[in-house]
Image (cartoon, rainbow over all chains, first blue to last red; front, side):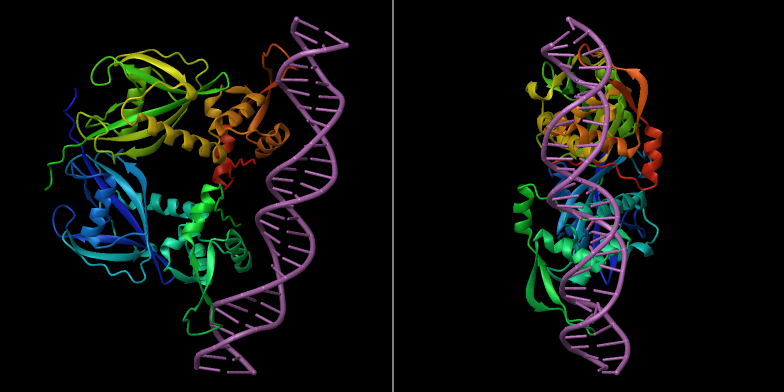
Length: 230
Length: 230
DNA sequence: ACAAAAGTGTTAATCTTACACCCATGT
DNA sequence: ACATGGGTGTAAGATTAACACTTTTGT
């Protein structure tokens, strides 16, 4: 009874990036194997002597050449026995955020191609990656309201209007500018810099930055980041 | 590179029960193997042709003879390479709730013994089960505030005071009786019955029941269960 | 001068918190 | 009559929601 198990374990990463007021997902098209010429999430099999975390980071590096700002375990998909046509695979999915604006994707060892796709222009995906992606999108939406993960999708210094648009875009709702600014500033974890953005038109706007250390300190003392708007 | 993987995949269940104003956890002591004479979570290896969900339910049945009221995936523990001394094991942990008051545990095929332990009187646990348990406890605490999972720990009909004590116990804080009752009743998902509890002393109290169908309907319309008290 | 985006305050409504006394039963 | 737990309302304070005009720059 003990050792007859023949199940493979993989990790997959849903990497979200944000650019041009759009939420993007990182997909790759592999050179070899069953996945040849199909778009898929970054991912692969776990090595015997490597942690799940190391496996994801390795795949992210090998297949797309990136380091992410935020990474957490999302869900383990293992109820679909025919997920992978080759053999039973259980996939531990991870959820990752990057500031994609200036991110250069280099298709490295395993990948033939790596590209950002806006969420509303997705190609057909391999396996059950479509449904994994939906789970991830829901997670992102809810995380946004109770953890300061939005900043991981923006450059270190950003305009308030960018932060606001990010929230509107991802949560798919309108947000009142004044109330949003008031609320965010009331937390005391976003600071004004001396610099200004470089938009072409309109009144110049100050750049802001997120103070992660301060957030951690406050969070330990019981502070709860929380944004909820009608 | 493809198929040399030698990792075993297991499921474990953290089953919480509630009785006598205490939160309990279901632990088992196995007959055979490395786990002989050690208390551990219900769990075991996944079969090749069985979903993760089926695996957990099977183990719950085989090792403790129970059906749970609530079951959800908790987290996949796979970063500790030496978790199991025999070989690399990745464990998908599930989180389960039962009304344990009248639950008869029958040690079935695999288990030598199955018992409820109050959270503050735990024995030493096998593997990394102690830390899995802590993750589960945190999950329970937070779930309690944004999903009506408390009802899954109580009998179908319960006293308001029982519900309140359950919240106090699990969240480890004092709650104002009037505010609590007002809040819960305002949701409209808990209904008065005609029956009364059978406490020995004090004024007789009505039994209430949770209307799950109504909750589901409301939840679909955007209703959010939410309990937060200082 | 006009277009474009940034910046800013107030008020009404709602929700949350704090708090204490009477009620129905068993002994 | 007393002990035990059940049941109830209100007022002050905090938070949220709704709402529109002025400012600064480039063209």
